[in-house]
Length: 467
Image 1: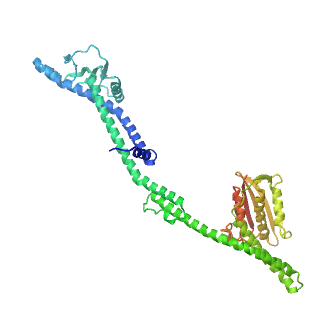
Image 2 (image 1 turned 90 degrees about the vertical axis):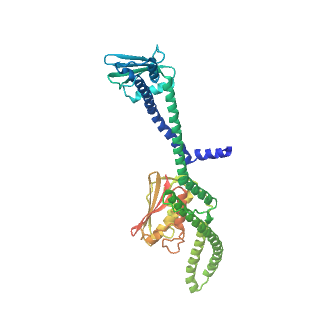
Image 3 (image 1 turned 180 degrees about the horizontal axis):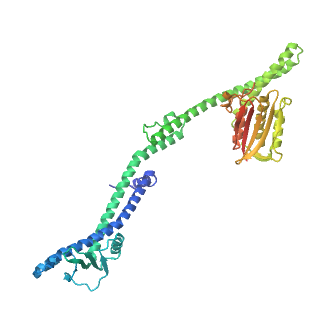
């Protein structure tokens, strides 16, 4: 089979740049490492077995000649001894030594191997030495003998057949290791590919398709009934995509409604402005009934204009980002309190508990709007009497500004959604946008606006800003 360059690159990309492909390579590497750890003792055991076979062949060859009172012909003797797998054999008995010369005598011995000591690490060293340095040396092998009345048997032989046998066995072990590692890695790769990689690719493809057009409901993934982690991920992704799709649809509808409301509010504000001018002229009338009803009419028109103006301001999306600077916090609180308590001067007391040296790093205009909104709400919550207190403290790398009033608190049903747009805390004529705008401005600084506590003893709001 001939593979094109593109196909080979695709296979390599799949193997090298995917989780299953990397696991395939790691599995093969670990199997090869395990086989390498097995390879060393196996080679030592194999060399001992090969030498043991030579010892056994030598014993079988010389066994007939160890029987006393037996005279063997020279031809038969030579035919038996040539199967000894050794050039020289020496049998040690209690009272004698038998020497058998089969091949050419060796005048020099390079290595002596004693098989009477069973030590695996020594066998491993001997096998590695034979593989690396062997092939042309002469070996002297000593082993215990199984021949009656004999203690040991020694053979002298060339190392070449020993090394040839070890090389043959090493090739077999390496081939088996390569086959096992390849087979194991392939099985792991295929298992992961079909059970994990393919489903994950389906999930990532669904995420990519949905990202291209999240307003297309047909791109929401259809989860499989799998009970495992991938099935859970598919179901959670489908739920998240469905929620996001619904949110975008709702946002689109709200944007359309908001645009229509903005146009209506703009026109309504112009109409109310004309009505306000007309009321000013009517107020100049000397009719007592007109004089009695005009203030109520003026108040209603002022509230309507305020509602229209506030709604338009909240609908703007191009507010400038904060331009933070360092300035004294106490002076800003005093300025905001003076503006908030207009009309409430005799109704509530104000206490500024902020130190003169306290500095803040924020956008002064935006922070003024936040504090002014909270102070106005606090003054109105106090009703005809009460107190408003402002204090600040630094903790955990943040500046916390607490604004507390002694009012009757916020109803629990309103406190749950207090910071949502158009939710009023119960103040007559309120638009329900002040706290929503204040929280947006605080979060624009990297901080937040939270309700700390509320109840019959009063309400505490906290402005948190980075210190």
